[in-house]
Length: 94
Image 1 (cartoon, rainbow, N blue to C red):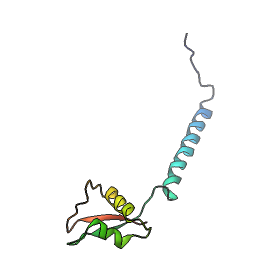
Image 2 (cartoon, helix red, strand yellow):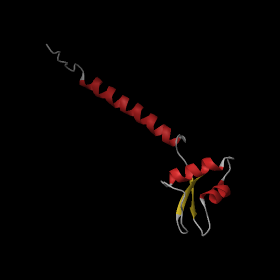
Image 3 (cartoon, rainbow, N blue to C red):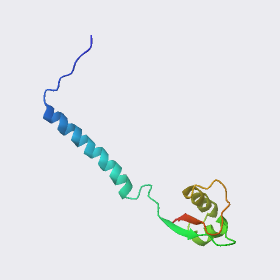
């Protein structure tokens, strides 16, 4: 035998749903506003003779160039390290 639920107070039910929705959306909004997982990028145009290593050396502030190269490849969805003159790359600010 199945139990049927009946809303005794629809107003309270709707207020509860709205309150929960506001609370959940505020957590999602706060995570994007206060810098969680939000990165800033510089746009670099690749010149003849540039490599990911030389570009990473120019923009490296953290110390590990290999990590910055990995981040550049990830930001630009590169599968290999081959880049061409005229390409525009996003370089994460670190």
